Amino acid sequence: MGRVAFVSVNQTFSSTMNVAQVAEVARKAWPLSLAKARECDTLVAVARGVAVASWRVLDAYATDETYETNGGPRPRIAFDLGEALPVLPEYGEFNALDNLRRGVTTVEWGWAPSAEAAGPDPQA
Image (cartoon, rainbow, N blue to C red; front, side, top):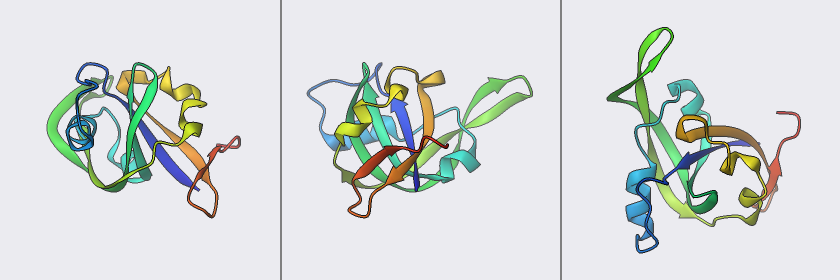
């Protein structure tokens, strides 16, 4: 099992960007708890409902930027990214691509032994 973070790059994505440029905008300033972010194995950038790039997550850390909650401001999170990974067709079948609350969501994902995604875990 692994956890995938889906992040919206709608405001910054251009079809002329290379993978490194997409990684730079996808990796940081997300309104997410550090604990939840550190559970993620994969980050998937989503533009207009389509998964456009993905990477292995090496770590996550708090940034100096904040977002407001009922309990007051909290730090936004950034991801340290590893190698680019294939964008799996199964990502497009998952409804998180259309429902990114505050631009980010995480999903428990079932992984097959070949490291190809088996899809979301229906028990999660």
